[in-house]
Image 1 (cartoon, rainbow, N blue to C red):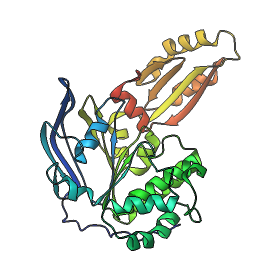
Image 2 (image 1 turned 135 degrees about the horizontal axis):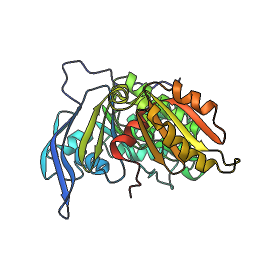
Image 3 (image 1 turned 90 degrees about the vertical axis):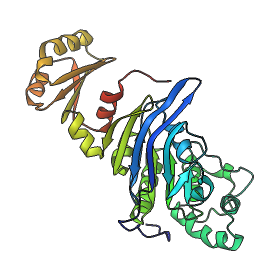
Amino acid sequence: MASLSLVNAPAASVPAALAVAALRKSYAGSEVVAGLSFAVAPGTCFGLLGPNGAGKTTTLRLCLGLTTPDGGEISLGGHAIPADAQPARARVGVVPQFDNLDPDFTCAENLLVFGRYFSMKDAEIKARIPQLLEFAGLTGKADARISTLSGGMKRRLTLARALVNDPDIVFLDEPTTGLDPQARHLIWERLKQLKSTGKTLILTTHFMDEAERLADTLIVIDKGRKIAEGSPRQLIVEHIEPQVIEVFADSSEAGSCGELGNFAKIHGHLAARVEVSGETVFFYCHDAHPLLAQLADTRGLRYVHRASNLEDVFIKLTGRELRD
């Protein structure tokens, strides 16, 4: 695994890396962040989840001092925000949702120019560039133009750029959106490595498996309010049945859609909870065996039996309807 010299984990007595209390923000009379409170322990990965329009982006901007709150308090790395936002951001790295690398520069030049924003000397930045590129899996790409990089390479370079100032806290806004599975797994590996060295990660993502893999603690917000908080495993245990059976019609069998509806009506009592989404019926069970026995004797239906996961929790808490 590539290595990168990073700061050690903070001592237990160190205050929260990020603390938010009763945070509020409104636009045009509509409250986007409504009394949000949470704290992030140093050296952990904190996940911020919510549907589109839930207030995630506004919350991140408030925490970084890029937007002025209407009420509440924010402490980032021990600095009051927004009053001391500039010194706070000097110890912060940000991976934005969309790559904003400079296409006119090479990989190394992108890192060099970005480091200058932190008043770092060129010699200091250049000394870090080889290990930053190695960490991002981009060894040998120092002189490569951005236009020659794949999407995964660009995303990894954006992560390397966020580390140029050796930050204590790294904000990651949907870091693996649009990437293939191989690139996603590589970035997950690198993020776990960062956390193991004491970095604090603040993560927003629409990939529930990503949050489940990376986050130590997370909150789910909707309409600017916190509706759940805990570790991924804790939320699954507290909010959802342990087993899920997804049943859907077999397109090769005539009349299978009608069979699905009849099956749900007749056997729905075998599940603790039943949800219908499109042409799929979700049976949430404490004991799946009785339902599986009925499915074994039913033609025209296909099914998937699995353990419940964070996505099930998210959908239960925020609903299945589309959000714009």
